[in-house]
Length: 152
Image (tube, rainbow, N blue to C red):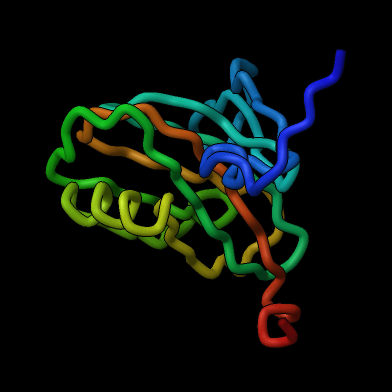
């Protein structure tokens, strides 16, 4: 027996879309550290804060990289969440910081939190998200080549 549902689905379902969960339990060298997975437009990862999550992404041209977090079961906002977007070989980075209040408030208002940075290098990049909040989260990463950004 098949059951069909209508409507837009839950916020979680909308956030995930057609992406597949990555257990992120591999071992890939990016910069001078090891990441559990490379996240792309077909995958997402789950995790828990407080703590740090490090993933890799691949860029084939200068791009705008967006990290999105969907918070679930939040027990405390914490003081700060930091997203580090590293250039290839970790020669430089873009650091984006949110207060705990902003993190939780944006998630409650919009359904998820996102921050973006422009990365110009081609190759493997490290993305690091660290937070002292107490929450479960889903994280996805979107990459938009800069040459296409103004076309949309």
